[in-house]
Image 1 (cartoon, helix red, strand yellow):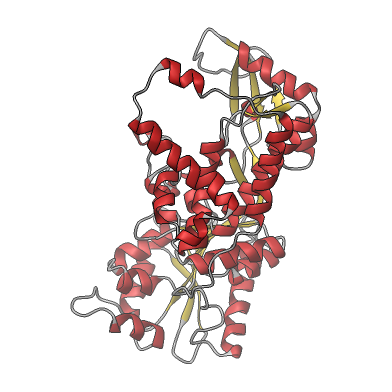
Image 2 (cartoon, one colour):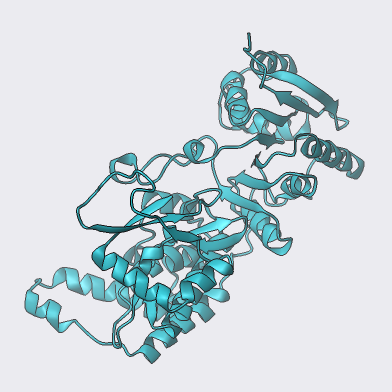
Length: 448
C-alpha cells in the first residue's frame, strides 16, 4: 500500500514522526508499519503536481468495517482511538479526525492505519472530531446498551454512523439525564435543532468559535474513555447465542465433531480460513489450535458474535469475527459504490468451515441448494461442510416456521451438487441424527 503526501501533509506527518510517537506505535503493533519510497523506485500515478513524498505501508490481513463489528469489537476500537489521541497529546500532536474506518484489526487487536491523521496540536484547539467520534463510536454502542437494538444494519445504511439527533429521540428518559449522555448526545442534539431553526449567518458562525484548553480536551477524552469502558450489551437472549451449549449434539458427538475439524486443520494448515456461521468461535479456536493461521468468522447473531470476539480477546486467538447475514452480505457502497467493498471482494481464504449453516440458507433464507452450496464452495479451494438431514431436530424446527413452499432439501441433492463442483475427500457421520461432515477439494476439478 502506498500513500502520497502533499507539501502541507508531509510537514504535518514529519512533525508527528519527529516526536518518536509513530515509531513507538509501530513497534507496539498499534500503527501500520511505514517507510519512505525513493523517487522513481515505484511507478505511481501522478495524482497532483503537489505530491512531495511517497510512503509504503504494510498491509493488514483484512479490511473490515465498523458495521461488521460486534459490540465489544466497536467498544475496543473506541477505547483504542481515545487512548491513541491521549497519547498523541502528550507528544504535542493530536488526531485530526475520529473516523472508525481508520481502526482495523489484526486478529482481535486494533491497529491504526491513517498516518496522515496525526498533526501538530495548538493550545486552545477544540475537539472538532467530537461529532464524528460520537456518531461512529459512541452512539452505536449506546443504541445497543440502552435499547438493545443491534447497530449493524443501521450503521451499514448510514456509513457515517448513527446521527446524534436520531439517537436522542430514541433514548429512554432516565438515560438522557446521565451526565455523559446529556453532554455527548442530548445537548448536541438540542443545539443542532436550534441551529437548523436559526437563520445562518457568517456573524453567528463566528460567534460560535471557542477555545478549549489542553487540560479540558484531555479531561473530555478521559471522561469519555471511562464512560465507554463501562458500557455493555443488555443481557437479552438472542436466537443462536446459546447454540454452542444448547444444540442437538451429545458430548461424545461434539467431541467427534471437534476431532474431525482438528484433523482437517492439521491436514491442510490453511493460512486464512473462513468460519461461515462461526457462532461463538469454538470451531475457529479448534482450527487455530491445529495449524491454521488466521480465521475470519461470519455470524449474524449479535449475541454469538459478541461471544466470539470475547473468546478471541481472552484466548489471544488470531480470529476476527464479523457480522454478516449471508442472505444479505456487505455490499459495495459509498460514493460511486467504491468506498466500501463487498465482503467477497475483500476476503480471500484458503479454506472454509461451514458447520450447520447450509440448512439455514436453504430453508431459513429460501436459497436453492444448488446456489447455496456453490456459493460456499466458491469461497475457498478446500473446505469442510456439514450436512444436516431433514429429520434432525434443528431442521424440523426451521421447517415448522416455514409454511408453504420450500426448495428441495435432501442428502442426495447435496451429494449431487457437491460432486459436480469439487472432489469429496472425506465424509463422516458425527451424530445419531445423521449429521455428516464432508471435506471437499476443488483444486483438480475441471483440469484437463
